[in-house]
Image (cartoon, rainbow, N blue to C red; front, side):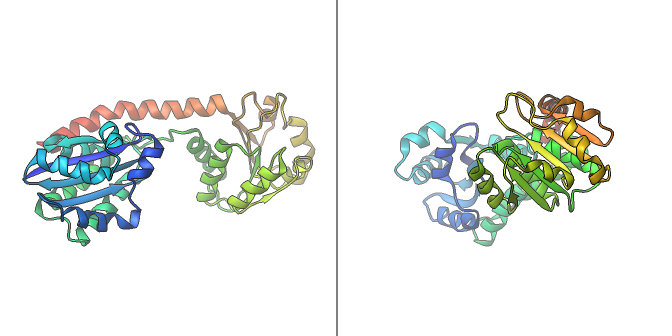
Length: 327
């Protein structure tokens, strides 16, 4: 019996191709059960996330099993399958799985979400009766390897995106984001992601303003917040704890004088300003106010880059641990 892995991910296929091969999260076990009904496939685990779709199978004949599985997965789209699907066999497949659960094959190096996604995919396939001795042993071993690598290395330490850096900084300032009021100036995608991250960490209130009022209304509705007209957003500074600004303005939209005007009404409580606009939206003098913490795009990217560099240095350590476990 031979082990093979066939799949595609964010590096080998664009999103429109990944969408076609994707399997609904709740259907992974059923799809794995269907695969063991094919000739020569004895065991199967199907993993599908937003960034990848992979199938791990145990087959009697590697070449025959790979061709049969590719044809089944292609489902009439053989050209796309030929261009984007990768094949890994034997130790290469085992090593790939180990690297995957350790976060070494992720879009964000060291991210932890994939570990739970692999465990869930295996659980569904196992409960569907699609796994036996070989895959049971392999996946249980991969979870042990993933836990060991995450415990004994720093591969997941430090935020690696502008959004995650901003959220971590906010938590250092406020202790916790629970109950914080977040204000977004401009309805750009990056500011949206930052706001979503803060809401997921406990921020309670969200206010959105934008020159195009409809975009502000739409984003506020999506994030369960409220919108205010662009001509009236300054009043929101009185209650805001965090301001995320990302407009296309050529001049600052938030000046130190505007903050000074409401400091007394704010009772001098901390204000965290995240300027992710280029040119910058927030006047640099605002950061000189005692209780104000101002971070622009360059500062956030440097912090994220430092974290990415630190994680990259840990890759070799992780690879060595994986090779030891492979033995």
